[in-house]
Length: 220
Figure 1 (spheres, rainbow, N blue to C red):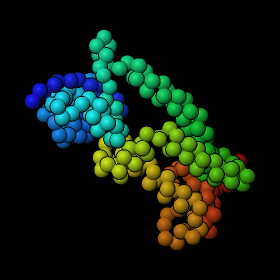
Figure 2: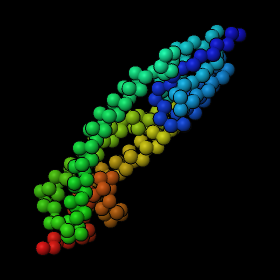
Figure 3: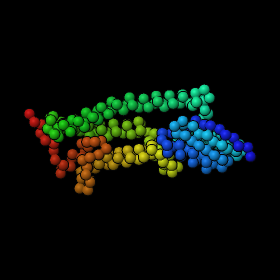
Figure 4: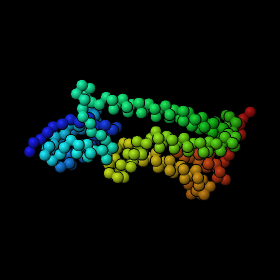
């Protein structure tokens, strides 16, 4: 048996549990005698029998789990181009998120200040506008900006592997679905659930319930 030691760069790791997932998967592969994955360095050191395992086999083994094994650049000590690409993608998502967050903050602040009597009540037209705008903004954040978390949730159901991304995807996804249901069926559900609070921070749709008090009038 000829054992080969090889070091790979691992792309897609976001926490220590990611490194554990990759390491366990490599060690379980027939022909692999040892594997060590370091989250800090982003490297995986693998010892394997070339008669049973090829490098491409290891790459294909890890891909369904959401990670990519690549060759280590000897000069850079890792794939800097991939890191740059990831940073650019994160930067683009932040730029998209900030304006949407600003709109949400204005909406929430207006409703909260109106309830305290500090500003005039939200006009009915704006009330209805925010009722449908907030779920749309939340959907953009969840399904585009947070797409990687939902993908991690999907891998959990397919592969049975979970990491920090899976927890975020599960929590935000469940909150979004719950809030959409409250928004669409507030009147029917108000007898059984607290329909005033939702993922959208303020849920104008829930105000359709007859037992929910109206906000106080603005103090002159």
